[in-house]
Image: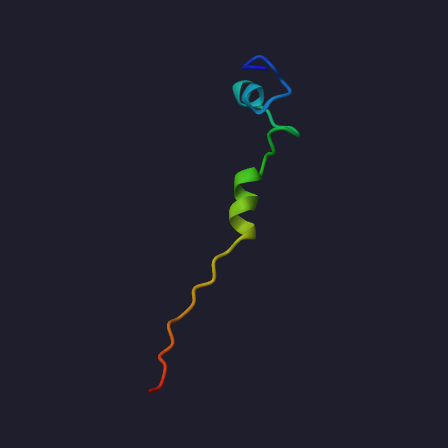
Length: 46
């Protein structure tokens, strides 16, 4: 369960490979799926 273990994300990082425990597009998918919509401030009429 360390750097030599090919089934963990740490081991995958150590041997520079991807798989089920270390997805190839994990960081890109998380940023692309949740775009933040900006809301404009509206003035209330008195």
